[in-house]
Length: 494
Image 1 (cartoon, one colour):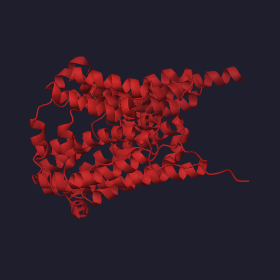
Image 2: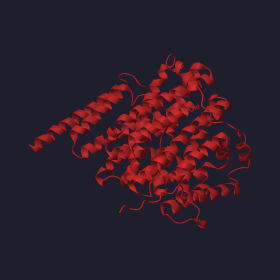
Image 3: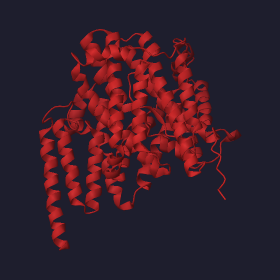
Image 4: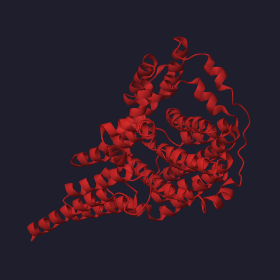
């Protein structure tokens, strides 16, 4: 007799917490995009009428697909506790496209509309490349140690998510610390909130109310919030095609930025899918990379200029006990909020310090998972893989505006931060291999690191031949050392 199928709900209470965590992650990116592009001189008609709607379409399509994928997995394994993958714009990739593609295009063309079209074309090509990379995604996942991949992701979680958001939390210490306490009690200790409200919603209500009551948030926020209300339809356009001609001729150099950041994006997806498997839900990494590439291309067809990825926040959603509802709600809300200009309004009304603690929890859960999912002997590899992102964080936060600060700390910060994801994974993989006495494998990873450094995927600002010669020699030296120990190990076994 066949076992009765388990009911997989469309929505449950835990989805609300996960929705607010994912919504805040995406809304922060959307607001940064708007403020930065307006500051660069791009008109509001492009920012609010093209770029944000295009990004919203990508977010909607991806979240709807991953909700369907979660339901498929739930049916296959007859489980009701499957969590849909989180999906949105990758923050590091977003900054690279803002300052490495969009800004140079605007400076070279002197025309904001043409620069936007060139960047849309670059985004479309990025999605195409990631979809192609999906063919080898499972092979790469099988050959890269879990400790290396999760350690690299934990580095992002420690710096750009938990660390950065803790700074934001303490910008309003009276409010931020109270909200952080609510998050720790409700999401870490799993204590029920008053009126059985979801923890994140309760925290936002209490924090926002207190911010206005004690004067940390002024009423001028409300007038600012409604400045850009309107109707911005989600319509496809030919901007990607128009920008393609210029991109492939006079602005071909822009593609040297697109290729490495797309590889980074594909690996970020792979890492986050691996993290989700460690948490209990196994998705096909090749399918996810293909979906991310397709989502990026669809967003570009609607005017979007930023690649999308499976989010690191997925593990946080898993810890919250979310299902597929939060993903469905996130996609729908972003489509509606962007169409009517509500994203900027919400961002203006709710202080950042109120929602930041939710993302501190997401970062905490990701770091904890990196250790919990690995044997204790691999902890040093996890820790080492986290470190390059410390340099990447310092580089991105200080180098552009105050390069002398970075130089005074160490001349290695910038070159260590360039290609931090690759460096993190490869150092972690070498360490895992050495711990297992697989010295030939460690030598192979060191040789790959030398190759990446030679072509500028690591330790260099752009792709070129012999881009980082000192690092090439350093990694080759590591490879030779590992080869020596491999022969020594083989001699002992005879």
